Length: 282
Image (tube, rainbow, N blue to C red):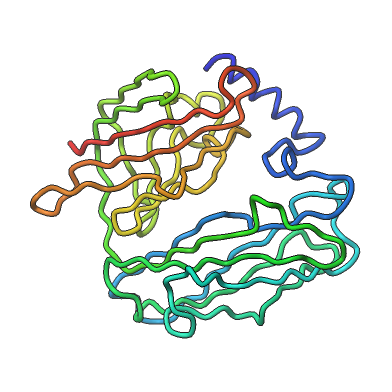
């Protein structure tokens, strides 16, 4: 951890001159402009009390190209909904755009607007909207890892806040970290903040705003969106499509939570480290 912290401070210095975050490192180019969804997955949770349609937006970013400058021409980005989507267009949701979006000259993002109808959603049965980006205009390229977003919409309750006994296992080397009093804090419906990330419970000592990471409970399935470690370091924390689950006891109360996630961006040793965290309710 000590070496990691020193590296992190060097990265901060680098950010002053040129961004060292994932998008630039992986997608920057001196040629074509590169665009793509900001997130590969997203979720929106509602309850029976949500009766009015809700508009949400998903950003499509200019993530690299032409030495980091914005385009001096409009970029048209077509999109389509994949047939694998389980949500019904026109009933569960409506995309408020007609097949394409325009990233205007000088802009670094454009928003895809979607209206969700919570009253149409069945209880505890998440639906998905899978959206692909097509070939952009003006010589722009859609980044391979940012072509698709899976949006989950659901109506379900969530009550995970509380204190847990936590055991975190690093998958590649088997090292175990234990935290006897891990607190999960609810930020909004179905959205929670942990108290630690991997083996780290001291990120705030270096100036990070938090030690933990943010995750979502989507009808007892866990989602960990890509985020910076501690909301501070350039290292990225994220879960995969099956990031974990909530385990209930015979009375329907939370017994434990399992979350599978990774931290990547280390400059020494294993660049991407995978963890399994098991939270047992106290």
